[in-house]
Length: 263
Image (cartoon, rainbow, N blue to C red; front, side, top):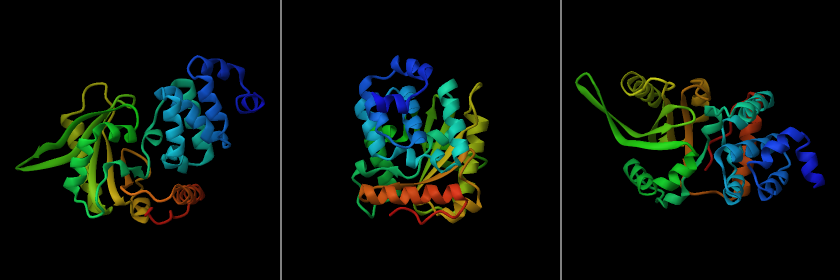
């Protein structure tokens, strides 16, 4: 109880949380030492209505460290979390993460893009859990006719809280600058022909085995409507993964170049 009082000193916040989270949830949350990380898990648990088991899985899966938000300056993180607490405002920085953990697909190391897409569709429910709450699947190989040519988007989703279409392209190997141009074309087509009244502009996510950090930084793709993230089909030991993520967060907040992509 002393730990609880120290972790949640504001009586009004406690009163609101008591209506939405159980004591078991709160016991898990007070065990998190970092205040910003604790606030992140508290608000996301409340918004997305995680069970205690889901909360433990998110913490063990280093969800906070994998969000785009974690790499922002502390003042930005604080502002985003306050907006989440006061107005339930989700932003892309809270939704998108890097890397995505796709070890559940059971893919061989030499898998193809087609095998990756097929495996995701076979285990779509688990993939949606890894993407996060709020995603709804719309289409695979979405056909886009532009002049005499046909283009095909790998996966198309809709995110209800963000009120945006989310286009996902799957790439093997390192992210390439040409991938950016391709996704920008897809987003413009979706904005013109698929976006409904009341929706926000479409968002794009390029998933690749190597995020190519320096290129992402040069192209300024750490924010905005187009994101680049890596995916892991085989997980390194948690301690190694956590250390690499913490190094990446520290360097990003310091304004330096990010370390090499996670193996």
